[in-house]
Amino acid sequence: MKIGLGCDHAGYEGPPPYYKPCIKQHLQNRGLEVIDFGTFSSAPVDYPDVAKSLCEAIGRGEIERGVLLCGTGIGMSISANKFPWIRAAVCTTPFMTILSRTHNDSNVLCLGRRILTLEECLHIINIWLDTPFSGEERHCRRIEKNRRLLGGKEC
Image (tube, rainbow, N blue to C red):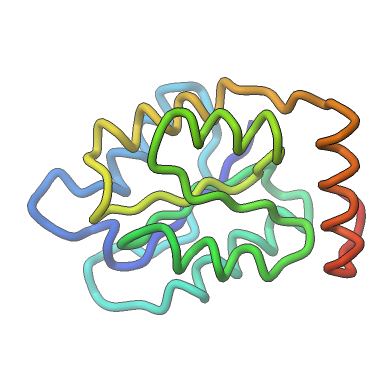
């Protein structure tokens, strides 16, 4: 699977280890091809720009899913969910992560550097990658309804 990874400057906030490089290595260790959408330092950047690049790549079919990291995950999720083909979820617990996949078929995971430890982020990523969408009719119906409300293309 090709997966996108992006962050704002929070991904490189101290103290080390810096979250984004560790997450990238973790994804690669799982055998995933990681497409990196930046940023690459602690210099301030605007999270909407990073989210836009990653989400547009999903829309073009260049990657299947994405992980976005900012201070809380909230800013990235707000930006990502502007795209009708994106179902971005901020997850802070394993249970939220499971439901984001089984019920919502989330294709973008948003994490908070200032909210979660690195170990919690890696654990949540593993759950998110390993949990399939249930495919239940009620969840498919709701996802499709949301897509239509946003005027988006079918995924």
